[in-house]
Image 1 (cartoon, helix red, strand yellow):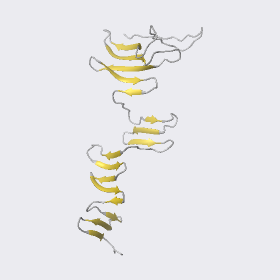
Image 2 (image 1 turned 90 degrees about the vertical axis):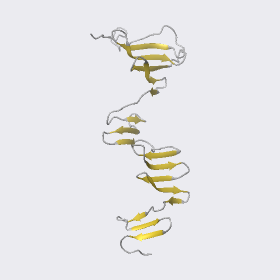
Image 3 (image 1 turned 180 degrees about the horizontal axis):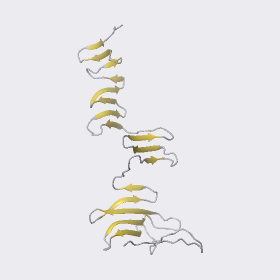
Image 4 (image 1 turned 120 degrees about the vertical axis):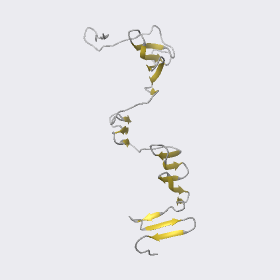
Length: 212
């Protein structure tokens, strides 16, 4: 059988909104429990619960509270989510969104920043006001397997670019440096090459004439 709780709206003899009150017997102090909703079986074994708590002693105009959501995998209650009096949400586990469902930041009508996956590609989309700023003292871009560097940016230092995990070029205080046997190629077919072998400097015209 299924237990049903029906709430009928009533306000001054007319029809109003339905409200459920779960009231505490005294004025709460900090971290006092306000109420608890339990989800249980016929033997009153609880599988999940929602707890309301105060975060400070309540006054006439100050009534801060938070909600805590608990789940259970074995026999112990595990805190899964807390929503505090400032509307901050803290998750104890992962947050999973389906394909094409987005994390949206900023104004609710424009969604200035979006993070999502379409099923084929992943997107970080800056569609609102201002720039997309990545702030870090050392920024690394690596492959999906997390075992190969693609690019590295150091504060007050070099910018390094990699090919197949091997550094090819980096910036310095005087410009750009290429290591030994790293070439600069010109033309669609690398028609002109400039490089240093470690012992010799080369300017090589692979095709056509070389005019100096």
